[in-house]
Every structure is written in structure tokens, then in C-alpha cells.
Image (cartoon, rainbow, N blue to C red; front, side):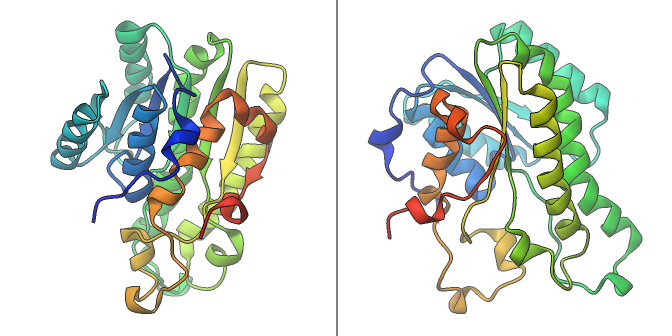
Length: 253
């Protein structure tokens, strides 16, 4: 089922005129966040590896009045030069970049570390941590040119994801928390705000690899979390600068 953006009136216009790169745009939260970005007035750059899904999302956003731009890229195989080229193309097309939302993720399923394929372990660490940083690093010069900009990392709850069997994915989540705090400390005097978004459990394909859907009664629709993405990307996100923010308590039931 397609994600439905909730709480839309609260975010209307809060990203007016901004350009936001959504990494992992065709995933559950990525799709919902991209739709919310359009409602909030932003131009979303949709980054993902599955072109048919990106095309369908592009059509949905256009139907909603948006002007999205597609950028197919596989984070697993992309090099630092590929990310530098992405930043150059965004600069050439728009002359600005105001936000990067990291919601791309890779998780193959629960497996004991002892039996994890080495290549799968390295892939999980790279896609969920290293590639996110390479992309951010390439975009920082553009983000610094804005009066106010934001880098937002979606991070799974450590209590859920760093226990037994979560492997490279779980280790990457702990690394992302450290990255947010480190990068915030280094950019605290710059226009670039850095924060983490710790969403509640969501009904996504990734979560389905670890939980039986019929019994997963606590999971939320990704659309319920989309407004939180906009909050962190918008100027009001300054209240959460340097934080790992969990908006679960503020979400309506």
C-alpha cells in the first residue's frame, strides 16, 4: 500500500523554495517524506537505485503539484567521485541545496554474526553508514552556501537494532549515532544543522524481514512519520540540532 502523508497542514510551506535531496526516495519512509517535501514547498531530488519505482514516485509527486527530479544511483556501488558528480549536477541545475534526508537502508534479515557472509556484512556497513557519509561529504560545500540547511539521518532505535542477530545493520546504526554527534560538533558554527531521526517502528519492507507482519501491531504507517522529517529539514529543526530525535511521543494514535 502506498504511504499516505499525515498532518499535512502543519508542514505546508515550511520548505518553500528549498531543494532537498532524499536518499532512498522509493522506500517506505522515503516515499512518504518525498510527498511531504512537495507539500511543504520543496523541490525534491529523488535518489534511489530502482528506476521503475522512482518513475512511479515521480509521477505521483507531479500529480500532487511538485517538480521532482530523478537521480538513479546505487549506493552500494557508487564511489566518492559519483557523489561529487551528483553534487555538481545539483549545483548546475539549481544553484543550491538546502537539505539531505538519509532514509536509504539495507537489511537482509536476522543472522548470527558467526554465520554472516563477509560480503553481506561489509555491504550492510557500507550502505547504511559509509555511503551515507560519502554522500554527505560531497554535498557539504553546497549546504554551507545556504543560509540555513540540514542533514538528517534516519537511525533505527539502538534498543531494537543492536541486539543479537542484527549484524552489520545494527552496528551501522550505532555508528550513525556517533556520526551525528561528531559532525554536529564540527559544524556547530556553520549554517549546516545535523540531526538524527529515530522513528517509531514502521510498516516497511525492511521491518518485515525481522518481524511477522500479522503480529507486528506496534508498527506505524511511514506517512505518520513524514511530518517529523519536514520538521528537521525546516528552520524549526534548529530545536533538535545535534540530537537523535524520537518523535514517537508526539505522533497521534
